[in-house]
Each structure stands twice: as C-alpha cells, then as structure tokens.
Image (cartoon, rainbow over all chains, first blue to last red; front, side):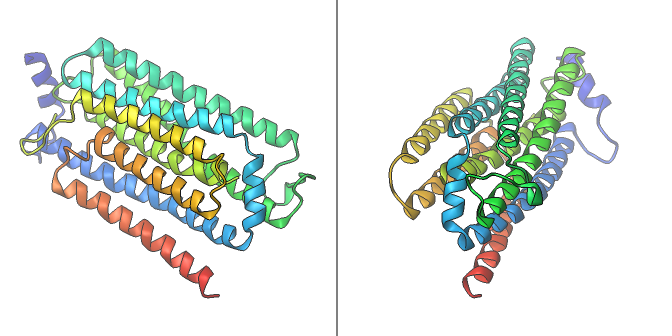
Length: 216
Length: 94
C-alpha cells in the first residue's frame, strides 16, 4: 500500500491538493474531449439523415447489401470488449493486477478481431466495385442514392476504424504500463481514461450498426 | 480512485450491463427480420440509445461521477440533438 501511495504522490502536480482531485480534473477534461469527438460523428449522422430522406429506397437497398452477419458479430465483439476493459479497471481498483492484465489482453485481441473483420468487409466491397465517391462502380445498385450511401459508409466507418486503431494502440500501451508497474490501484488515471475512450468508440459503433446494417 | 462523494460501480453491475447489452443486440437483430417499415428504424435507434445509456452509466462510470462530469455528458447530448434537429429542419422545410 505504501508503494501505491508513493506512485500517487510522485505523479501529483503541485497545483492539485490531492491525487483524487487531480484525477477528477483529468476525468472532466476527458469527458470534454469525448464530447467533442461525439460532435464530429454527430455531423456525419446528420448528413446520413439528410441524404436518407432524399433517397429512402436507395438507402434501404444499399444497407441490405452490407453483410449483416459481420456487422452483428462486430457489434457483439465491441460490447464484450467494453465489458473486458471495464472489468480490467474494476479489478485493478481492488488490487487484481494479473486479472486486469488478462482483461486488457482480451480487449486488445477483441479490438484486433474487429479491425480484421472490418478490413475483410472492405475488401469484399472493393471486389464488387463499391468504392467511395466518383470511384463507385457497383453495377447491381447504380443509383446516385446508393453511391451516396456507400460514400457515407466509408467515411463514417473509416473514421471509426481510425478511432479503433487509436484505441488498440492505447490498450497496448496500458498493458505495457501495467506490466511495468507504473500504475497503482490508488492512482491509475491513464487506465480509467483509456477505458473511457474505448467505451466511446463502442458507443459510436452501437449507432453505426443500425444506420448501415439494420436499415436494409 | 474515487472522490469522497462518488460511489463505485460494482462488479455485478458490470456483468448485468454486459448481459443487458448483448440481449438488446439480439433483440435488434431479430427485429431487423420483421417487416416493421419506418417504425423498425425508430425502434432500432431507440434500442441503440438505451444501449449507449447503459455503457455511459455503468461502463463509463457516469453513475459514480460527480455533478460537473454529468453536466458535460448532458451538454454533449443536447448539442447532438441541436445538430440533428437543425439538419432535419433544413431538409423538412426545403
């Protein structure tokens, strides 16, 4: 416990009264950052609503062409990974370093599986001539509405994929820090903030799934 | 680490949240095969909204967060609603 307290004291900036208040400030700042990230996606969601109201039938058919099985498996993967990272934080708060490491490892594997499935799905799209913007050449759905749907699909899921890659890198870094004992059960803001970021990426996908897969 | 005013989310709550989220995903998946028309889309988004609330309150510890953090989350939701309503109004009154 004394060693844990030492880590908290060592990492306390002088303008904060205590590690708890410092972590509270970090958490508040993280929520503001997550809010701005959400607004970035909100603009794309709004664009989807606008285009869909103009091309309802084309959007319905285009969404029906997406692979619902892969989309659903990826949804389940992200939900389970959200649980594993939440579990890693929960057990580490109570001193369970080894189980926390295992949970983070599971989160990393699930995240990489999501990325792998998404890239496989993109390769399938490219095989059919489904590209974003002017490169779109899918003969089965030649309408302007379908082209707009898939352009938005690539933009939105691509932006989400970039966030996933950032999340996977952060989880890898957290595993490294936990293994090197750079965090303590009393003070581990990077683990808590990394978890918040991962949950944001999961939350965005929870909305992308009905937009691009269930709407078909 | 939690402030004195905060309560910690329990391990049980995390497990129940996981079960709830997977259950709601299964419901959404099953409903996608029912012919519900526009109502199906509204239902799918409502379920997604409930799922995000579970993630935010349990996994993201909004349940144990102090007032200032909750306000940031609330303002974010209001801004998203503002963006979407603005776009909907633009499309609807063209």
